[in-house]
Image (tube, rainbow, N blue to C red):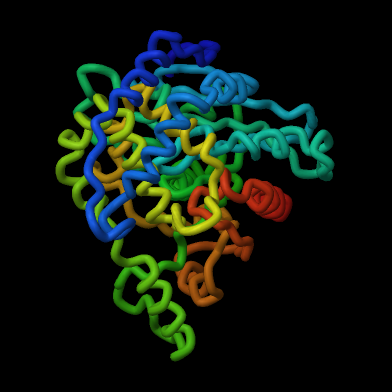
Amino acid sequence: MDEIKPFRIDIPQADLDDLRARLRRTRWAAQLPGGWSRGVPVRYVRELAEYWAGGFDWRAQESKLNAFPQFTTVIDGQPIHFLHARSPEPDALPLIMTHSWPSSVAEFLEVIGPLTDPRRHGLDPDAAFHVVAPSLPGFAFSPFPEPADERPWSVERVARTWAELMRGLGYERYGAHGNDAGALVTPQLAALDSEHVVGSLITAGLGIPTGRPGELDGLGERELAELEELTAWTSGGSGYGPYLAARPQTLAYGFADSPVAQLAYLVERFKEFDGWGTGKEPVERDLVLTNASLYWLTQTGGSSSWTYYEGAAGLPISQRAVPTGVTHGGPEVMRRIAERGNDIVYWGQAHSPSHMVGMAAPDTLVTGIRDFFRMIR
């Protein structure tokens, strides 16, 4: 691990001017029949792009991110950017938080304050945290070096990198939390560094049937019906996963050259996960455009898809090395399945209108994190 250096986001004005100019020069596709079933409608993307070019204030979002201390280092040859917000509470527990795909550390903008300084936010200070929130390798300000490292960026490699980061920060005992891609990294980190990790907390992902022999043994008809309904809900979609796994470089040209191509792709992921365009939007458009801006301005649209082309996308591993919690767990039958391979001590039933929990329902995430680590610390 190299020296840790202070970092501040300061996007050159020329890059912002170029973004706006490209948005205004967009050559728009014709609208195909079928609405959302054919992809994100032209009118929807066009309205977002017009706001991105003329109403969205990147500098305001940049300031929100810069309100938290940020640093960079190099671990195993990979540049790593991270937020590191320390709590004023003397007994605060260090907590490493791993964001989702396709997202960024901006996912945690609304949760870091209540976690690090609960008194200031009207919460009991009995659960406070020193928050470390790294940008995943290949995301935003953790870009892949050139030439690219040919060694696969597996979830296990990220977990080793996080363990080294926490060691370098001097944290001997810490908790871990993650959402989506972060929910894959977190239990892997717990298994790898169980001597130092006190608990593994994820938003969801455990208890989803995988087809392994004996996995459904002992379940009743009602429970099996619940699982069948869940499987039907999660199946289908655009098929983006297999394409990212097979041909990510092909998509990367569009992401690098057209901000609208990058925007439409990210919006489709939100739509597919969360029902975008079908009523009240679960995530504010400024947050959506903050993420789109981070991908565009750092040219990481292609590299951020490594979880697919490295075969790292999937479900969290099971581990019994440390206690496990799930903040937004599904039906109780999923807990029964999850308990077969994990020491489940917390199964929250909070609701989020979005897969991107930290952005759509930050209060529920803060509550889940505080409740879980109260139980085990």
